[in-house]
Length: 171
Figure (spheres, rainbow, N blue to C red):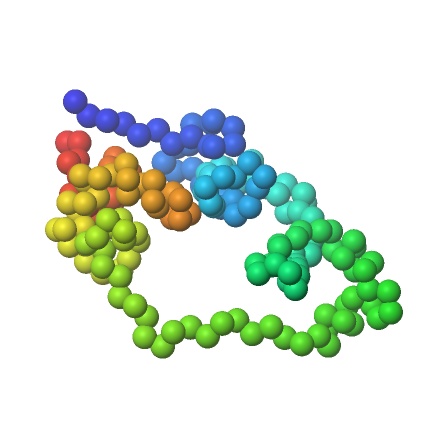
């Protein structure tokens, strides 16, 4: 018995043909998003108005003296601009002190993909037998961890994943 995978647009449910162009949409934040970023697939026509619907927003972090962690706030750019009453916001943003990103560690810690904590994460190196075994034997746990981290999940029906992790392939 063989399996056949049919891809459909997440937006409309339309069946996608192998030759169809597909657009990948990664949802980073949404009120209904509970477990981190997710990805959706659609046709270019289905998302052609996405840029027209985009809002001009300001995303800011508010550091309060009483709270240890900052609050992230999204508001329209015009609402944010109106808060500057002495100097126009455009001028303030040009002359404001720059925030420097934290420095990266000089020696990146090597991950052991042969552990359940890291098995199945995308990487360029060779997949060890231990990683393959963990992915095959504990696929549900691996996929839940990957989904929680916003990383693509492993699909045994995907020929690339099947070859990489040693899943049986339909002949």
